[in-house]
Image (cartoon, rainbow, N blue to C red):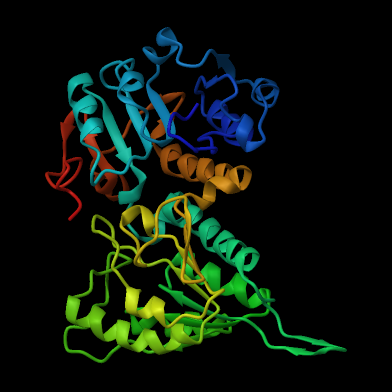
Length: 373
């Protein structure tokens, strides 16, 4: 069972338990671990999992592989035996308490955030599967909070114009937000620092806001957007200010791995937004794309609703868990034979995301308070 506050997802569903069992593994599930995701203890028991009490020290001390969403707390990790493997979204750029536990207990760990963005990794890409959910739900939250319709409506009382939505960032979350907002009938504009995403944006029926033309304009590295310079961001803010002044909704999705989220909407830009407009900030946990947003909180700023939406996948835990658990199976299945896990640390997938090997930390810029700057 997950220990992080507000975490409703589970790392194994009855479907993936059955898959691990078919590989010869023995699967232990803590009681009520899947309840918040819509999976009962009986669901797990019926496919062959063994139910254990929450935090059972004997069971924890015998496991070879621990699957999780977020990193367990130190007390839980200290129950694991040396050589056990931890796999999950471990927040590796700033989790110094995790580093200490991995070292002291000689635990291996895979951080799914670091999975290389290559074709082989697509089926195991947990960031993408969860970002898809976040982008979809962000639009529904915005539509619920907005004081207007999303679609154009022609009624006996006159015509209602469609909502105008501006999406910042055309990654997985941003593109799903585009698709969802278009399905609801909104007019959608998209801003991204990478000109190469224009075709994807327009294929979904949105209008692409061309990035500023500067010599140092960023592109991408390893499938992720590079961090932009302050000069570029200043030019982008000037460009976006006019767009936001006419927007009903802004959805912020821009993040850079290991770095604070770029500040794309400042106070002056918010001052130009109309009362009743809504800003959804998916990057709030990394510092936020929008000035003034707070994680898990809605703030009314001069009539504009600022919504810090840091955990939207947890609001759809059934499908979020189903997709995430399939990501885990896709990553680990090639390394399990007859119930025995043998990681190949030279494999490019594992080499990129294995942050600890039997307690030896493999990347100097990870798992320290200074890892994010």
